[in-house]
Image 1 (cartoon, rainbow, N blue to C red):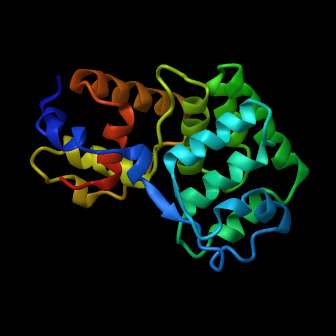
Image 2 (cartoon, rainbow, N blue to C red):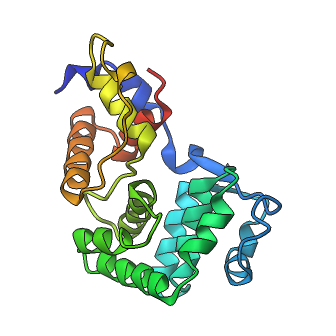
Length: 216
């Protein structure tokens, strides 16, 4: 096992990502979200949304209880949280039939256990970078019960990985670090985190949340 992660085992074990990784859906901040989208997630207005809520939204979609936009919008609200540009970007992603088709087809690829296809379809949506593509893949694959499900890979996680591996602390502060947009790199990231999780005997989400928090 890598010593760089093992020394944080107890800290990682205490995390509860499904419940504690949560954000408020502030209806005022999201007031300009398009009408169709607002109606789909109205039940969550001014409520805290956690990871389990979003996973459950994907489960309902895959069981035929909800349309594909329901889990997509909830993922965007959870992901953008209280940032000032979440509404604008979400509306932009949903501004064309082409983008909507890409989203629905990607969710279908997740159902068919083809993560690479889903990844490449979502990456065709302008502005929907690895940070949000990985969120959608994470929630979707968790909902479908993938053994080695996808994990969230954003700037904070990427920076923490470099910081963690920069034992002497001489390098990470000198670099402008962003996650790679290549599928093979995303796949390797997922394999690494799942390997660490198995060695630590914790859920892979715990390791990812530990990296996202960066409290080490």
